[in-house]
Image (cartoon, rainbow over all chains, first blue to last red):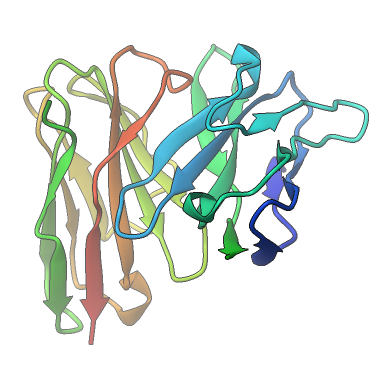
Length: 112
Length: 115
């Protein structure tokens, strides 16, 4: 079965400290992974996707196929980074059909 | 511009009651998704439409759940004979192209509480 695992429900860090939100996946195909974020009282939104190799709001995520991981990192946490973060995996089925499966989420709390 | 909207935002239903949840996607978006998010969990896929065609309904938990998008825009998720385990936030998302890999834009969700 295809799975996305986010082992930490809550991660608390001090402002200015490095952040690493962990995500591991289980998928037999070629993975496409995303990070979604939900700020307080806002809707879920895409943060970044691995195929874009982009840095958004100082966050980066590298796909490590050997470790089947897609951890989200930021060198210096800011208070405005406090939010729920969801790792998501795009599944591709035979015939080309696709759908997205989400992890359970990690709440990042940045302490001033 | 206008994003994805959902109504109602909150719904309290008595067990056994039928409910209908509405999603207005971003205008012109081809794909529409419904997710169920239980407390403390991530969104769980329910169903997917490409225009008016329901291409995947494998995530619908039972035959009490039914979704439609008759004109390829607004969608309705209907739950018949609601049960307490149906209590969750129901999220709708849309994307501009016909494949799920494209960025999904989420609505604010409908919080359903079944008593």
